[in-house]
Amino acid sequence: MSKPIVAIVGRPNVGKSTLFNQIGKKRLSIVDDMPGVTRDRIYMDAVWLDHEFTMIDTGGIEFKGTDKIAGSMRQQARLAMEEADVILFLTDGRAGITAADEEVGRLLRSAKKPVIMAVNKVDSPKQEMDVYEFYNLGLGEPIGISAANALNLGDLLDAVVAAFPATEAEEKDEDEISIAVIGRPNVGKSSLVNALLGEERVIVSDVPGTTRDAIDTHFIDEGTKFRLIDTAGMRRRGKIAEAVERYSVMRSLRAIDRADVVLMLIDASEGITEQDKKIAGYAHESGKGSVIVVNKWDIYPDKHDKSTNRFTDELREELGFLQYAPVLYASALTGQRVNRVTPLVKFVTEQQSMRIQTSVLNELIRDAVSVNPPPMHRGKQLKILFMTQTGICPPKFIIFVNDANLMHFSYLRFIENRLRESYGFEGTPLEFVVRNRDEKEGE
Image (cartoon, rainbow, N blue to C red; front, top):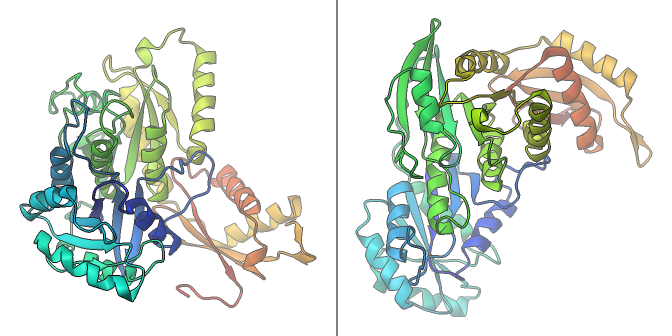
């Protein structure tokens, strides 16, 4: 089931990014320091009062847009209204209501989505009176906050989660594998879907953005049931306005949340881009299985084993956090290696669901420690007491130690590598929790 999406909208310089980052400082976001994960965040997974949601930092909405596709602030605000579950409209209490605020307010009043209005930069009791002016925008009760000083953020988030739509359990066949096909426009997502299905079920066009929404298609291959989610692509910087680009990301995030395995399409002729890193990073952080599909390999110049190895090396360097993901070189247009996609997805699903007995895991730990003992830190030695697996999809492990503060990320990586060397876990991220010997699950 996809998480609700909260879009922060407003004119430039009202503090949208500050609010976005402040929530991150409150440790509500999923943080991953693995190499290759872009730090230029436009999304953040958050939890407030047991409600999980995804927050999007949309960038500033301006009147004078010069881009022919993006158009004006009106088009951008409408995109926010269409794609988000809740719209967080941020204004500036020091500046008061501006013409841009009024324009956005007129558009949001016609929205069929909940709108929460926050008045930022209210840093002292003296400024609280400035909040009342914003009742004039006709969007309900404004909430005065200070994003920079983290004042009143709790009340704001209370209002946001209270506006979430009622959740309905998504009906899913437990034997069905859900696949999200993701990537930028023109990498061949719709063409791959058509090739997998063997018929023209999705319109294919060379115009970026033709695929408007996620389309679910169910099919059976070699006795296994699959569901394909074809998503609208991510757009390159410079092609359209950044604000519109960020809304297109929402569709991909929803599809990833609903998927078991992600097919990350890379255009062989263009290589890996920052946008590829963003969307692949979200799949990784969400614990989804991943297969990297290098599409348009039929038109890649000078194709031979060495060029394949070079491209794979570049993938591993640029997408360092996806070292575990298998790579398939294919052509959706000619059908080259398309027949390998579903068997590979099925294999990754099996890897995601693998369970290792505790006794076997602890034998692996003993061998690993004997080969490479944990380093000393300030005169103290890390002692690994035992490890157990507590979950699947993705596989989750808890490691009990004498002092969790002594576990360095590099040694945890060493344990992960030994685990993968022994048991594979191809295509799936692994989750590790390090606990002191007297800690219990959930503490």
